[in-house]
Image 1 (cartoon, rainbow, N blue to C red):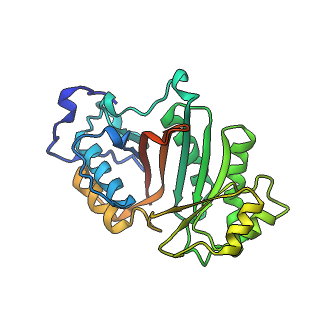
Image 2: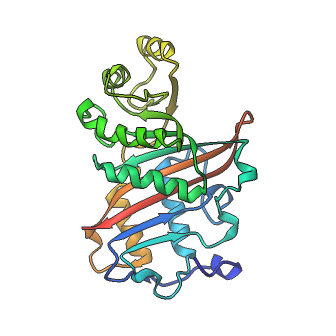
Length: 276
């Protein structure tokens, strides 16, 4: 993106004209830790942080002429201070976790999200990818989950991710995928939302302990970017003839930490929307 510098950090004041040919839009917040002008508070949820970061990014972006007329458009924070690209000299002491929030069961969306995360961070491999359950947690079946999981297994086979994990799946489903003969790469991580489960059942703890699965808790919403929140934000910053035709395809969050220190170096979001 062009326009980096001091002027890029001022409010634009008018919506951007997205070209009629554009049907896919990818928006990247950059490193929200170093992002100025974003409201933060203790206990802030994922949706609130994501929305405020996107709002700020869309406010300061300065696309080059003709950039918004392409079928696929990528919008990213123009200021170098928000950059998340990691140099080779920085990579070794860092641990990168990417959490995917797909909408529905589209395997291409999962593949695209992982590839975008690698591009965003300019790395060849991340330590962990966690797949968030795209369906209400009691509705997902093993047959529905397996195609999505196989996409992640392909990235593992290509040595682009070391460990795979799941978030917000029922205990019976998690046990089923761990014991499934069709699964080559078993989950190494399990994220549980304590909104749905006030405490981790003892039998689940034992099951994970026997398989060296790390259990983590989180407070991410089931739907991190609802349409009722997303469309008004897009309309605020983009001149869209039919905002209702735009919907979320996937979103992701990356977390880059200094190993053995627990210090967060980079944190950001990428969101992909499409026009029907």
